[in-house]
Image (spheres, chains in turn cyan, green):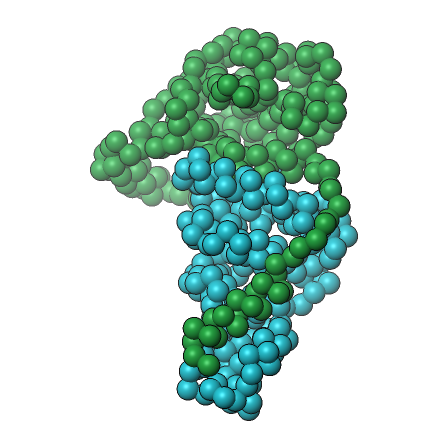
Length: 177
Length: 225
């Protein structure tokens, strides 16, 4: 039974878009979830939870360019799958220190000429799933920390820590490049 | 490399890591999932909200009532509250929330489970989801997942449903001598309606792709198993 708070979709058009998006991709989402969870019921719950999180910020979803909506939902469902696995003791999110200093990205000053595009792409891919998700939701989708917390089901402080740690690593990589 | 280029790097990572393609097997989703998704996608206003129990003393209750009254007065036109039988009805711009104001002297947990005793021909029970406070029984016509009837039974104290009333009025009905409400969302393409009633102990809803008469007859057949 659904038990999460749910923001309401505002228009029939939004409902139609989201319904079509679900119908087009439900089997894909299920496959992603089932591949890690190996439980039909849990995989279905993960799909359901994904859409509950999407409709938390409906306007954010509907302003995303259509071709970027699928990756957005995939980020959310992969995160949900990891959270389900963590609850079962089969996955552990990295614990970052609470006093981790704020770190901002400083690509402009340091990156010029030091690392290639491909090297940076490859490096970002090596970040942990949790950090990569936060960085992409921020940088590609323009979500606020609060919104990231909402769609990832974590608190804002955890978002800040993930971003700070990821930015610090990226800055280091660029600096060393 | 500047920030715009960095965002493009991130976008490339995003598309390569999360833009999954290719054929995937077709999964036959359970009715429970389909019903929940239907509520999320098509009738989002009907989703139950989690109930919160507040421990309030009499003074806090009075203050709370005063605050709620003032809030209602202030926002008159945005939210209206009215009452029908045991139901309190809070009318929002596009949905109406139903809950029970006085739930004393009735079961606080499910003690007896009800079912629909006179199903239309071809329907059979296929799934039941239950906990201490509610029971959802799902019936399906043959193998047609688009033809379902769902009976819910909820203890009064925990009943809190939002109904899509944007353009759809409630109609007063009587079910086995008990007052209830009926709402019809049917359109040219689809028949869909729901009834809700209080049998004195529990709150029931029955929803299905049926005509009004058939749905109400069905509601009247709800009996203890």
